[in-house]
Amino acid sequence: MEGEQEKKYFSVVSRQSNTFVESPFTQEFTEQELKTMEFVISQLTKDDIKLVQLNQVKIISKPVADFARMIGAHPDDIYKRAKALSAGLLNKKIRFTIIDDAGKEGFVAHSIFTSMAYKNGLFTIGVNPFVLPYFLDISREYTEFRLANILRIGSSYGIKLYKMLKQYENTIHKYRDFDIEDLRTQFGIGNEKDNNGKYLKYDRYNDFKRIVIEIAVTHINKHTDIVAEFIEQKISRRVAKIRFFIKSKMSQLNQAKIIFSQFMDELPENTSEAMLLKKQWQAQAKDSKARLNFFMPVFNCWLDDSCKSYIAVSTDLLEVELETSMFYNKEETISRMAKTYFKKLKK
Image (cartoon, rainbow, N blue to C red):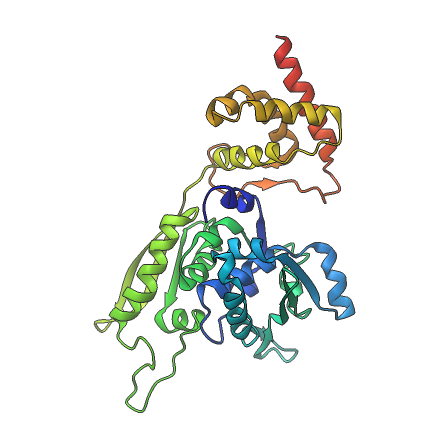
């Protein structure tokens, strides 16, 4: 995904419970199936928690053209793709490990989607209310990542690995260990063996490494905000574990510049101040770098109002205030930004 489509999703931050991030797939997902799932999750809001209490399905509808761009399909081919997606996703499940009331380990498996429909130019998806709590009203033990990073990855294994590594990005050691069998389970490849004791898929470790791990790491390093490297740990000459080292790419300053530019592009025209500010911003669109330098006082004003715990050189995920926050007033922020801009012009 490139250009305007990438910009559109850069500021969309998905917050998911670590229980979900760590939940192994019961079977393999295709790249488009995972991207569809991640996109749908990003569309959930805190208000949807009411659906959990009422045991009601969450319905999400998107124009077919938008959905086609999101999954990287041609609009003329979307009916065929949507039909294949519905056949696959409606059969997919996620398994969560739990500790029951007796303190024993157990599991719960859920289908994420209850229905899919393609009609009247819309693609409509129903989300199971039982899985909504893993994405709503989460205050601890969660992982955040930008939807754009997920949508750029061209491998289902890469998407899954990215999320699991992103969870450890800001830990002290910045690495994560996996047993080979655990990693196979996470990817939905499974550890089933034939009568000769061989895995039914990717039996040779070199095949698993080449087709699954190396391709996933290549996509993560090329298309996301982190860099991953790995080393193998052997037991009796057999690779038993893999350690992934994780490094962040983008500073909070660069994150902020991208999000600020999108904020300015999408300024509402509901007040004279907002209209004038947007007009001045659009008038300098030919040179984006020079424009940002010119609007630096406005950028700093936006930073003060909209970004929490901002540290320019930090590579942690930048926290940006949302319109739904009770402590944030977008209209007041835009008014202060406009006054800052016109004060600069008078100098």
